[in-house]
Amino acid sequence: MSWPDPITLEGRHARLVPLQPDHHDGLCDAVRDGELHRLWYTAVPSPEGMAAEIARRLALRAAGSMLPFTALDAQGRPAGMTSFMHIDATHRRVEIGSTWTARRLQRSAFNTECKRLLLGHAFDGLGCIAVEFRTHRLNTQSRRAIERLGAQLDGILRHHQVTADGSLRDTAVYSITAPEWPAVRQHLDWQLTRPR
Image (spheres, rainbow, N blue to C red):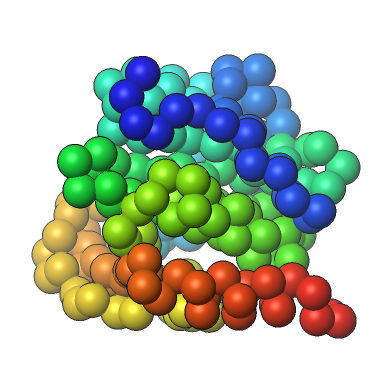
């Protein structure tokens, strides 16, 4: 297996484990929380499409272009998916993407900690020079969440993708660079320890 290797990342509110086919039923329950697959500006798998999405991500892992995780809540229940994707081992860059979280945990310590775990592993464990985030230009909830992490907008890729319904997606591209990571880490650690 090429860089990066599968790993489990653990925190107080969240645990990220390598995606496995037996996570299927729990992920179907999680995606029903909020009916996330019905949002037009996201590409979240439906319960009926979950098996195919798990197989797709595992095939990309085998090809070395994605490292997919199942996000478990504090009770160990599947609560979403996330991935390192567009992996560039030569230049030590990854994108954190293909992420979705059950509605019950959105804008919570769980979400913050998932990003903290992934960013910490990317910069401190893998020695990445930059980590990217990409989202639909019109997905304001996602864009605000990425900006709250401390990521900077690099630009908009206009007509970047054709979506499942045939419409054209403009993609907002954000990044955090290695020199920015210490300040971002301090901010995320503060967010995780402050009273809610």
